[in-house]
Image (tube, rainbow, N blue to C red):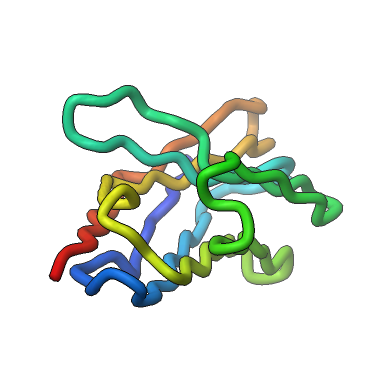
Length: 118
C-alpha cells in the first residue's frame, strides 16, 4: 500500500511564504512524475505544478515565478515552495504521484489547507 502525506499548510498574510511537503511511503518500486494540485471553494481541482523523475518542472501561469517544486528521490519527498502568496492562492493543496508499486497508478494525498488572508 502506498500513502502520500502532505504537511506545511496554514494561514499566511498576503505576500508571505509557505513550504509544503509531501512524503510518499509504502511498497514503492519507483516514483515517476509528482505534482501539486489545488482546489479552491466552488472551483474545480487544478494542476499547479508537476515535476518529472528527471527534475523537469512545469507550472500553471498564475504561479510562475512565485512557486517552486522540488523533489528528493532518496527520501521520496516532493516540496512546494510558495512565495509572494495572494488571496487567490487560498485552496486545499493536494500532492499527486505517479507511483510504481505492485501496480503503477496515481496516488493522492489527503490535502492540506492554505489560507492567504490579512
